Length: 275
Image (cartoon, rainbow, N blue to C red):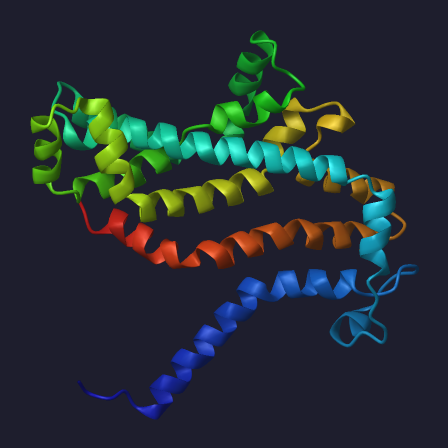
């Protein structure tokens, strides 16, 4: 293999460094502001090179911000939504990947087409549906509309296409029905894809602001993004406290990513190599 010229390598590394800075720069800026002492406006020089660093903002937010209840609500909503998304997406993907029936291709194309519909477009019909079901201002209303996604179905279908048919046929010969094949054969073999889907689902549910803001009204039902959004008004005189709450909200996502990052590449590639 021909070795790249040094100047080209330098350009690659420079471009990579710029992209990394653009990706993590806002998070670093947020952390920097949250670590500065409360009181007064901050200047750009303070952000670039802060004179003092303190953790008092985090303690104040935890004691006075009332985010513990919102944290528990977010954990509950995120856990349920990610679990349902993995199970229901895998269940819907199985017939699309391994069974033959009339209209299968058309149905799959319709499912894929929903990926192009922005969430903002369906907010009104979703709200009317949730209100008609009597679920307004409940945590069920937060996760129910997103308990299965077209992206999850697509990802699981592509992974199941890679499972050898011989394994499925052997299970059928042993007397297993379709549901047992799905549970005992398919799910164990697509675990990396399910882990990837779980990570995306967790990140999406944890950071979702628009929909919980629409369907939640009571403060004791607020999820973490909604509670932080409210803190921007409560702590308007000192936004460092709201920024400290945002940093606290980032911590669980960083932990989840570090714990499951090894599944990401395998899961994404499993969905990319099959047509």
